[in-house]
Length: 332
Image 1 (tube, rainbow, N blue to C red):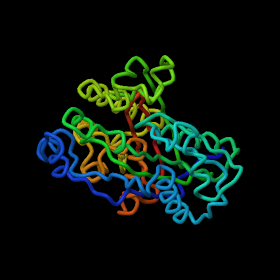
Image 2 (spheres, one colour):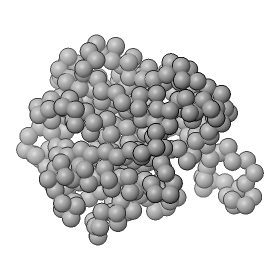
Image 3 (cartoon, one colour):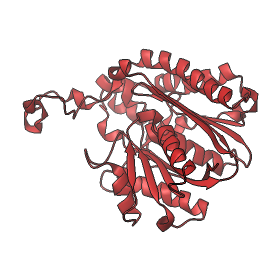
């Protein structure tokens, strides 16, 4: 039976660095408050004159393709995870296809927020296992900065999110590769972390931009305490599920790459698993929460730094809006 492996990783973040000190000039906050609650020191925001979700993703993909020793024309499927498509429709998968100069191949968009990359990875893994596709681009990319309420009213979310893109090239292998993926959701909590608009289930007059007076529905709403309480539970559940499914002990993990939501969550999970610092990769300090982009960006950087090596056991885990949560266990 065929398995799939990650043959190449890439990432791209915008040039503009937004520090906590800068945010404190426009929001009633400060560097110490942000670091204490999130661990974030800075994040990247796009330049609206030149950056798009699709072209950031294309840059990440070109890096991943080069590392996989592939040409873009050899890709036969794109799975694109994002909740911040460049357009309301179509999705950004076809825009990425265009950016890469490809024609006719399928492009699928996945809208599972912070868990989106693992959902996309799982989807691509199944297509490779069936033999339907051979070279698949799996992408997570987001532009959150243009939707943030950069005022004191929105500070609980404004300080958290950043922009960026990450990509992986998946290929078939007769070796172990992706050992398993595990996906879950619970829609009871959908409104605890969401952006309401532009939603289709509105009276006609409420969907007309010239008639909208209250624009708060277009901003991120997050019940931070509830999200945190659920996240720490679901992270542990889904990581343990992956370990049990493969009869592997937690001590065998070489690197845990959690979704970069909050450094306190990552530290809590690390403590519960009893993993030393060198076995957990975090970069939220410099990028913030890039939603679907966070895990592939972190994996790409970890690989660059020599923290992911051949035969390593790598665990990915995420929790986010939906609520959704997911994990993947990979033998590199």
